[in-house]
Image 1 (spheres, helix red, strand yellow):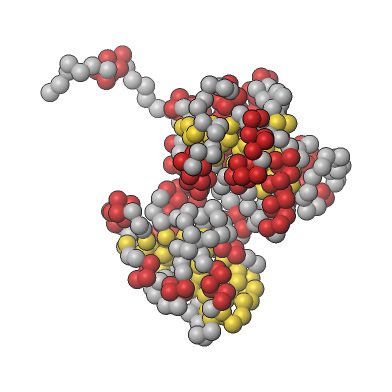
Image 2 (tube, helix red, strand yellow):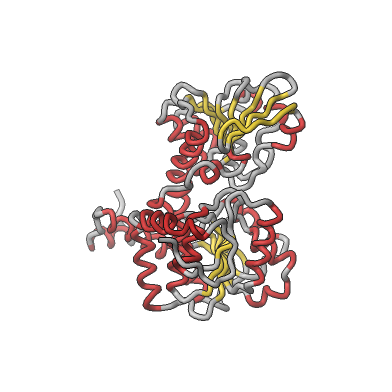
Length: 425
């Protein structure tokens, strides 16, 4: 049975997709016990009553549970996509039709539509912004100065967004609190490493159906995301090369058993390249020129600028769609380079994003960060704030509890020892 369309303003692909979307949302919820407990508490306590909230996120089954939790908590919430290719259209439809949440997101939306949705979000006059890449926050600061007085704060999910927020703060334009959700231990240790590691290779395999065993995989960047991709690539039998600009991370990659090379030396050797740096033009014309014929390039960093696709297009005589989310750039030299997911997040463009079990912790951090902003309204200084350690630990405790795992506790004697300086060898 097709869900009855609501009268809400929304822009989704097709509301008739809602039944399947609801089914998938419910399936994802099976592995999101921490957020479920928060959602149940919010339904009783209504911490966001009277709060207008905008969430700019990848519209996935997992994000749906965050949006539902915020609505249950009393928030007047609007959801938009944080990436043109990351929306799951059936989920967007279900959130509108089944949960009465306004959604403005369509998979494959062009840049004009994406920017219009950001404007629609700001027209909601939010008190809190949940951001993934800081596009909404940056647009507010640049174009909606008159609304800044209404902002309680923002939360940020990604490394890319944190970098932008720091730049805003250093320029003196971030004049309200921003919660650094990305750097919570229960976010980046798990979401970035295990989530990105699995979902990125899932996207590559869905897009290409190639065997990774025996291939040479070049991972650009050895932050938490790069560690996850390299680890999972090695587990599937790939020969992994890491490229880095940070000497400490390069040493870490070496000691984790990976080869480390500059990109100019790795480029002729790679069969598959995955960028996870958060920077721009990590793979450039001089790299394309020396790649093997048929080398594949993909990105799992936030924006589609890590691979210099403009230059690649100029070097090519033809671009062909050879599979869904798989384009072959035929170079004028006679070789070809295969681009996955249009250079956007391959795990969301060609697959379903992170597994719900890790997003359970990430979105628990988002929900509790919003609550922290509301509870501390007016008392937080402008700039970036870490998730309180006790909140981070509580999320981990709830996750362990849901997994049926018990851990030790300190004895009184151990507590005394840890707080004493007089006991030595």
